[in-house]
Length: 258
Image (cartoon, rainbow, N blue to C red):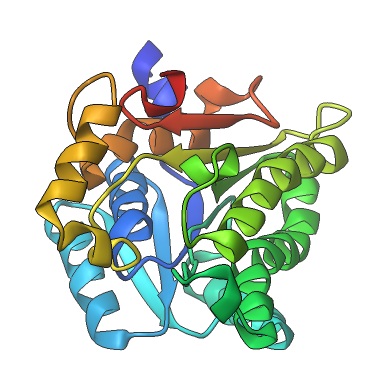
């Protein structure tokens, strides 16, 4: 085995990726499959999942999907059972499912608040809670959450989303404290991407002036593309990142550094 294979290959590992039918989740699932993991993509839409899985398979990856609504926390044990029946118990969990209700604070209802905090913050914990025991038994596991620029910055019309993503940053630290101790082999980290065209950000990308302004806010001078998360996804899921835990890493072209 070469040094690179020993550090970054995910052959023999199983990954479970939520929100994998589009956007960041789809990009991360594709990257993990390309690095050798057997990937189960989870989302609600079967048609989009089929297309995402076909893309990964065409590139030589091992992939399948499970259509499920992970926002229903009570249904997570059954989703985990069904996912584990495909390739085996997951070694890698990517919590990419999310929602971003852009609206003035005065329009935020209890239902909107509860849905946002449940999917963006509650589901990552309760899903990881179900998978951690098997990771502990095997002595190896990787949990990757999805933060945001709003984990550290306030944006207009983003109060519930900002609260949830600020929580994800602290949740990631708390997960690491709980599950990475004692050389368990489990790490818990988060990726916070910059502005990228996804279903959640589609309203922003309809305004060219706004998008150009967002690109100027970065140091690199452009907004993010799905491919920008490939490398960090593979790294955090790999043996190479075994001494990194509790961290939120920004893939934002330098936005958060300005």
